[in-house]
Image 1: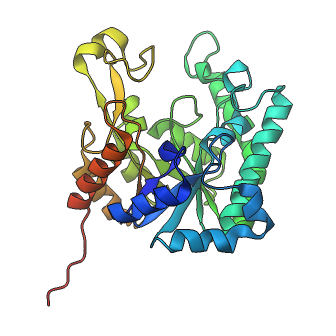
Image 2 (image 1 turned 90 degrees about the horizontal axis):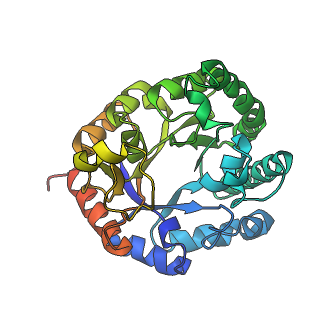
Length: 317
């Protein structure tokens, strides 16, 4: 198992500066965002028009590999929603938003293949997240949404198959799969096709009180990528805000908040043990979203914490 860095929280910094930081920290890989507004570290059109070799060389020069490409923002448009919530990604009628999301995911898949990257991470979207509630729509609407997700994503998974790439959906609020239960239904809807798996972000699962260890035990061979992010549920404020607090992430009076790895409530030793049991041998990609720690210091603290507990093979002289 390797430690990597998801570079998007450092997206305002020059790419080589981030690569140098990741390398000096001791990381072995980087995950790179391709989304609209986040293309500061990669230009998809440049990769697709012959720039892949030069780009790979740049990353390799720092002793790093590319663990995954991320298209979390643009991929949301494939499944929805299509109201003003997603206007910040692309403004248009639903058909235009779908078309834009599909094209961006296609480019990411094709770029991944050219870069010898076998996984892209992202969101599959959700037509209407409120349909999960029994009133007023009812479960039948939520169940019908799976067929819409399948219809829109199947051609993209076909492209993944032809390019030797897998799509790792990240369970998260406002997604068709956000828990063990809904993830099972998602795989069933796609007839268990192997091009679809999961990007495990344990903090997102804790948000909905789902145990990430149980998620790994359920979907071991479908864990294609892992994010290194922690979270905490604050008992005092949970009674006031619940797990869906209003306001910005820096409001201290929240029942839930993201933290740097080792600063939250994820039991990382148990989680890594579960990953070892299912033979996950990929990357844990540090994603800094802690509002209380400096992003550089937070990444360093996360790396040092993981480095201490990830098992290594040791040879005696």
